[in-house]
Amino acid sequence: MADFTTQVTERLYQCTHYYATGLKGTLIYYEQSAGRFVLQKQEGKFPLAPPGLLSFLADDIRHNVEADDGLARFLALRLLRFDQQPPHQPPQ
Image 1 (cartoon, rainbow, N blue to C red):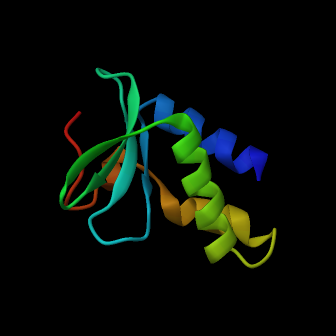
Image 2: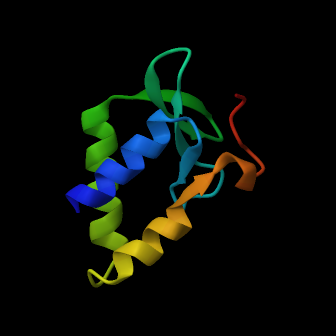
């Protein structure tokens, strides 16, 4: 799981990817101008400290991945490039 969270945080830091949370209209990305992770929901944007991000990722894995081999598939569904934008994609 450490490799998973490292890969997610690295891609978010690079500002090339966002994390689709699986909840409609909700995603996580890194806001470079503010130097922080952001949880964007339909209600607005909320700062997300690194420990909160790691906790969220761990819970997401625990609740949605049944076997170790499913982790790569799960990552492919959740960690998306910004050119694969959902309707509520944050401005860059």
